[in-house]
Image (cartoon, rainbow, N blue to C red; front, side):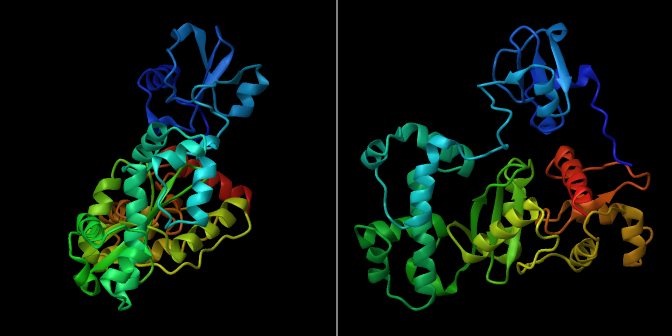
Length: 350
């Protein structure tokens, strides 16, 4: 059985005061003096503990007469792209290789500084750096297919070959003339109902799908780069788009299995554990002990747990379906609240 009870009030209040993101989705804090309810990570001034009560869902808070906080917007999906930015994101989707300058952002009614801050927070780079990376990704693909450097530079929107060469070297740590010798992993952001995820695609398939707020994300990116001997490049890729479409279908309840090709590069032991994870049926759970029995390594429970934690492709390789022998939830890189949400969701949709 899964635990459904809320943590203790002391634990929740401490999480609220510390803006602890690991409690996102586990509880909502309602403020008696203002009549609003908030996420645990809300940046508004914190209430006294006696003026706070806690709920497990937004519907419960609404039922008790509270209204959503305008600061943290608890009714929106975590990490959801803000409404003010959506016209720009749509333009990027339709014309990804067009260079958009600050004056054009202002013409769209957008503040360049505000756009820059959002891209820095969500993509760890400025908007203009993001655009350059998208164009370099396209150039990389063209030169891999034999296109000349000069023609490619102008084709992807650079105003000079020297500027293109500098940008290419900064992003790939190699000269454009060596494009044919470089392995690349294309990475980009995917929005989901549980918050944004970072997807990465190699020449063999999807090699990364992690929640953007995972503490180990930077380590996973370095592992991907090292394991595949590849440069990480922001950009668009049809396999990332296919992954997004399949995730949308999964969260809509229309599919239970994923068909996007996977690149499971790891140690032989890790790959064996990940293959067993793929065999866990939708809507069910399996213990680490059972995983060890299936693998034929009954004493390797801890090693199997570590391999589960090293899984780089969340949801699709369903490590969220592994629980303790007593049925209790155990560690999950995306946070226990997401693990519980996924298990509850799948059981409801059986």
